[in-house]
Amino acid sequence: MNTMVETDIPEITDSVARAKSDVVKYGVAILSGVLAPEKFAELREAVYREAEGDRRAGNTEEPYFADAMIGAASQRVWNLPSRGQIFCELVEHPVVMDFVESFVEGSPRLSTFSANITLPGSDMMYLHADQGTNPMPWGPAPHGLNFIWCLDDFTEETGATRIVPGSHRLRRSATMEEMMGPTVAIEAPAGSLIVMESRVWHKTGANVTTDRKRAAILGFYSMDCYMPNENWWLCLSPVVRQSNQTSLLQLMGFRSDSPLGRVHGRPAI
Ligand SMILES: O=C(O)CCC(=O)C(=O)O
Image (tube, rainbow, N blue to C red; front, side, top):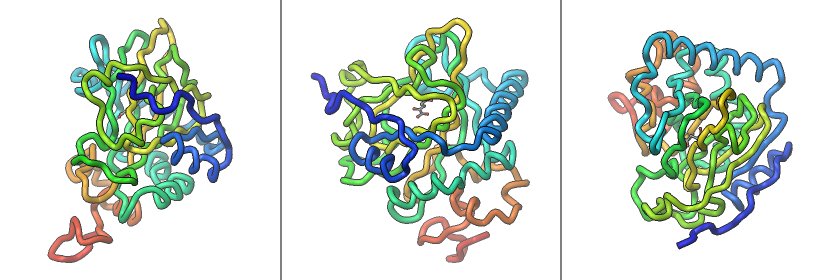
């Protein structure tokens, strides 16, 4: 069965309005010009530095369970907000918050803010939707939005994120048979921001190069009724936890503006 509803993906755009309509139509948008070149360089350097630190510390020995279908896994760098203020600031980038407000119902929460680096020879991930752990049937609106900050060129060869275009309209996870079906690589130059709604079936591509890595920061924001991908209550650095970044802490569930996640009925922090 071929469930590919569309065969094309949107063109890269520098218009936020256009990108929002692309997310509705295709489930995905590719934006340029969001990051200043100096900020991009600083973020890229920080991610590769942290990745190297994790590798030396042995933190990469157990790969994330969904990362490799058969062969070697990509390298994840988890919990970026605990690793530098530059990442905390990126969580609340105004363009991101504008999208989240437009697409995520209610009070949004940050589900993950991590990096994924495909390595020469790393295999593809399992095909999934980011709201795949949420009960079905899914409704007419996505439960979340994923922001993929491309720190290197996303190409077919380096393992660009691959999607099943139009799959957001099916409002369900892929079957085992569909998981093996055709996908399209989202090719985008370094510095681009890919915005993908949470019902789209997608996966990390295989990196078939011998010498090129593909790094990206992944920020997933979802409705507050779902458990975050990263357990911020256990892993967030006390330095951030005790800071006065109230809106950031609210996104991470340390403060509540909804009936959920309260302490003695109060918003907590
Ligand atoms: O890094 C990528 O290309 C996508 C990763 C992904 O799909 C995920 O973490 O859910």
